[in-house]
Image (cartoon, rainbow, N blue to C red; front, side, top):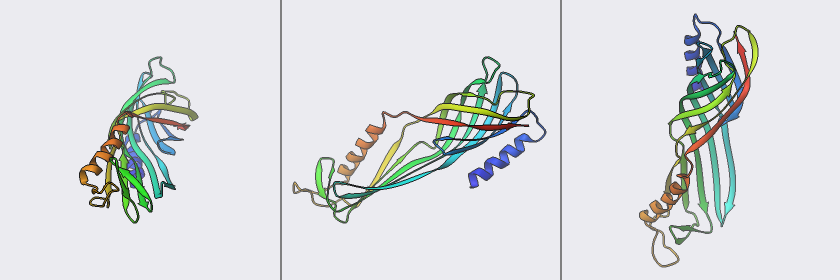
Length: 219
């Protein structure tokens, strides 16, 4: 809520004394809803700011005797420059996003798990992983709408693009020092190596898609 109020204050300040602006609301991803403000300076370019949020998903499951709870939430603030190469509604978009996008996976076991090739009894133990998208990322995309126009009233807009960044992963666990089936113990190095495997798998993901579709009101 604080982010929405801050954005509303900024947009209100920007709108003072200017015309041919529009406010918009939409649905999409990574946030379920989008609230924003756009100001076209000319038929060739304009500026926008918006907030996307509302996505918060939780799911429980069981894998190999380990009870797993996963939560994923996503919100972001964005500042964008729109370029209209054909002086119409189609635009190319560049910008910057400030993100709060992460997944938390918590495991509490009653069976066994494998950590860096070591099999360990998970009974009563925990293994938690947080996967997080960078807090600030560049944005590139295309869109339709928000162009300069003397026509007031409702209209349509669409955006499709990518936020450029790589997810990171961190793990915490109570397994360090616990005996393994081979007669050894789980070390912090084992946990670090298992976490690195997760990071390596996430390293193949260098962009996060973003899409929004909705209504604008020009005034």
